[in-house]
Length: 223
Ligand SMILES: CC(C)(COP(=O)(O)OP(=O)(O)OC[C@H]1O[C@@H](n2cnc3c(N)ncnc32)[C@H](O)[C@@H]1OP(=O)(O)O)[C@@H](O)C(=O)NCCC(=O)NCCS
Image (cartoon, rainbow, N blue to C red; front, side):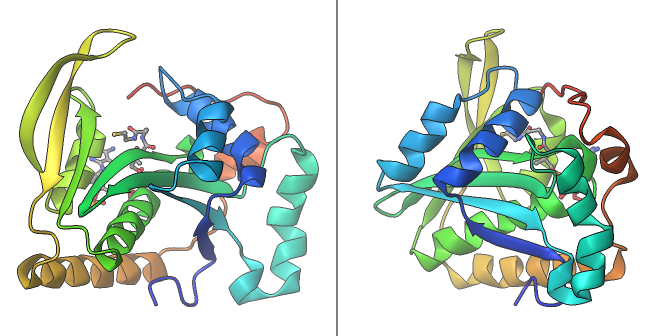
């Protein structure tokens, strides 16, 4: 189990998560999906698979950690959910998984958690027998492209002027033959490395989040 002994939980996105997801979405993307789009995905789109990642320190450190850490955060920011680290999702159409979104709250970045969400989406897609895993990414979004390359995505095409806010091109990146042994072995190795990384790091809430929780101020990231 990738998350055993770690203070994170991954669960299917629910309607209760949507306001908090939409808040992160608004901070992270220049053309954010509205809450209604996420509600549609969860309640009406049978092809969609969405996950949320949360910080749950008490799962491995007990009630004391809950009182001192996250619980404090929640008290200070009732309209936000600072424990919600990020989310991602894909559409499964026959044997093709199309990753539609992936985001990590800015304060939690650089800890392997975007990778954790992506790898969990891929694991779910493989479990559901996807052969092709594909996505679009902004041509300028080098960080996300690096992550996708690490997991074996290759650029297979370009959509000119795909993004409506600035007419930026999208790169189409795909893993072909994802269900074959070769990819599965590589994927298992990446997961093992990710788990080792997560176990080795402190996994405490980001200082920045503790400082800003409750004042509604957040940096805005374009991708
Ligand atoms: C893309 C995103 C999900 C990555 O999340 P993250 O938690 O910061 O990334 P991780 O710490 O898991 O890093 C995983 C990999 O991403 C790449 N990466 C992460 N940060 C990077 C940086 N600052 N510069 C270059 N590459 C970076 C690396 O390949 C890294 O692997 P490594 O740690 O072995 O070098 C996050 O930056 C994000 O939410 N961005 C805004 C939304 C977005 O662009 N979504 C994708 C839309 S297609």
